[in-house]
Amino acid sequence: MTSPEEPKRGRLHKPEANAKFATKLIHFGREICEHTGAASVPIYQASTFHHFDLDNPPEYDYARSGNPTRQALEEYIATLEGGTRGFAFASGMAAISTAFMLLSSGDHVICTEDVYGGTYRLLTTILTRMNIETTFVDMTNLDAVKAARKPNTKAVFMETPSNPTLRITDVAAVTGWAKEHGLLTMIDNTFMTPYHQRPLELGVDVVLHSATKFLGGHSDVLAGLAVVADKSLGMRLKQLQNGLGNVLGQQDSWLLIRGMKTLKARMEAHEQSARRLAQWLSEHPAVAQVYYPGLPDHPGRAIHERQSLGYGAVVSFDAGSGELAKRVMGRVRLPIVAVSLGAVESILSYPAMMSHAAMPREVRLERGITDGLMRYSVGLEDIEDIIADLEQALAD
Ligand SMILES: *Cc1c(COP(=O)(O)O)cnc(C)c1O
Image (tube, rainbow, N blue to C red; front, side):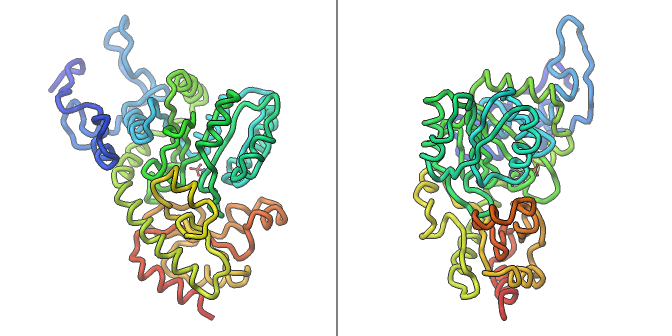
């Protein structure tokens, strides 16, 4: 046995700065237990830690403030996003709401109008009570973003591609403008993951994830992550995470690390199938409209290609009527019909009655979220089977 003060550190080191993404996914510095050599991060099922020497407080003291399993995950996501510090939370919304706690009463936020429904709810029903107000704008239009700035504007919140119509925000343009005015920039990077898009490299201050989706990848863990590059911002987020206490437990931290190791392999396969599906849908006579940033006629394609390395695996399409959409959802045999996305199994969701049910109908229609719109998160099934299944579901 090795004593706690003499870990076998021989093989443990941060990945080389120039290591490729796939290598960092596997060798992130904590992949081997430093005490036993075990080939996976141990689950430290402990809420508190012994003080061997009262005069020298231990690295870990109490699990809300730090647990080695959670910390391994936090260092892992920081490495993948190219940040200095990562944070793991009990859900994507816990990560997002904690980031908004960087603001104070009286502050104003500019947010993309296509923001995730839970973030919309947070901003419009909870943060309003804290006297933090938000203006929602069409972020595909930089002038609209600029026009929304007020004397008390403190932050800009982006999400690109957006949900469910996959509209594209020019991250570098918005961030560059925000920096000129001293505004904090935040982005929800859930749809892309750091495999496809690394917003810190474009100047964004806080990158947020619902790790419940592609990062976890198996529809079995609810989790959120945040990453920053700036060290003082990292200290402020650490204080918030510890103060709010909405941390991810050690079992789920382990499960998330387990899922993330295959991120590249999964994202590549997901995306390849999504491209095929988007192309096939765009040629189908029963489909009125397809939304996918990889399609040649997608209005944001050029901007997306500048800031991202891939198009992702979410394809939305409009069957023209609620009647047909419901028929498709009743007939499909492969995807689960559910809220959520980013899993090994395909997931078909119906924004009008699921994620966007709370949105007033006129607002919903204005944003292209019609009664015929469905969102397909392409899983790892064979694409031929996925297409054949949709073919029969869309048939007369
Ligand atoms: C699911 C999701 C969230 C919320 O994450 P939870 O883990 O469900 O709390 C936030 N943003 C996007 C884009 C999402 O898809």
